[in-house]
Amino acid sequence: MIVELLDTTTTAVNKKLDALREEAGVITMGRVGTLIIKTDHDVLLEESIEAANAATHEHPSRVIVVASGNADAAESRLDAQVRLGSDAGGGEVVVLRLSGPLADHAESVVTPFLLPDIPVLAWWPCAAPAVPAQDPVGKLAIRRITDATNGEDPLAAIKGRLSGYTAAEVVGKNVKMLMPLPYSEGHDGYLKRYLETGKARIVGSGRVVVGERKDGSTFPMELAIGEMKLGSQRYFIGFIRDLTESQKNRIAVAGIAIPTHPYFFTDRHGRNGFDSRSRA
Image 1 (cartoon, rainbow, N blue to C red):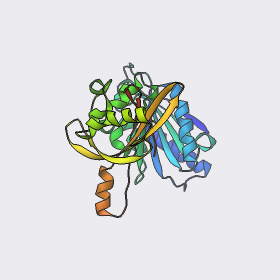
Image 2 (cartoon, rainbow, N blue to C red; image 1 turned 120 degrees about the vertical axis):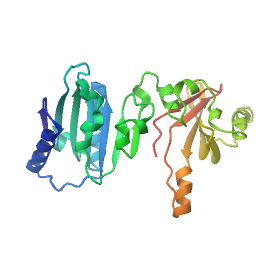
Image 3 (cartoon, one colour; image 1 turned 45 degrees about the horizontal axis):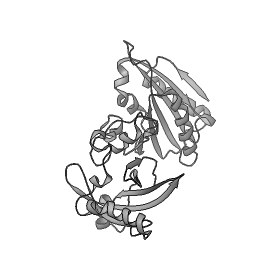
Image 4 (cartoon, rainbow, N blue to C red; image 1 turned 180 degrees about the vertical axis):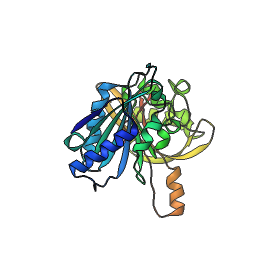
């Protein structure tokens, strides 16, 4: 079921959503989260909704899609779409298309649709803000998901989100810049020895090292190195996990929670790159 609401308001959309849910008999449906999808590309809009619908079959959620309308329009306008049933996976989908000055206030439009006491996640399937946590929509969420694959410069975008650095500061640089001494000095040597001797000291295993942020502060980091081949090219893949919170939790309780960060790869020539598709 897909219902269009043109030139509408958030109040009208909420009322229509409640009415449709009542008609569909899903008033008591439990939802475990709210997912905000922010995209400016119509092609990715349907793909993103399809991916979200697949996930909500196991984890019923409200999906709020914020899309661009006519940003150059003189007057603010909200066009909406409500999806339920087979068109919404195991939850419900609200598509909000913002035009005019309203396009600059997505967080204000989204807020009336947030469910009380339910965790919020924000996802940018295309270009994401430089600092997602500081973005107005990002501030509404407890977790933020970015995918730079469809961006103009995916590698630069991903590198720019690491440890407070901007893309211009890290593009083309060796990944050891994210490590303080003495870890940075040994990085290239370990890989060089492996290529020359075939004896792995760090490849195929994980270890805890020290990472360094732009401001010079350090943090405990788990680094696991793997190896892969694509054609004639040989790559080393490093999975990085920030252990800061897990160490705090270890002190407070007998448990560890380690979030997964984007991983880097280093080719045989020492060139490094990052990939955002690493998931826990």
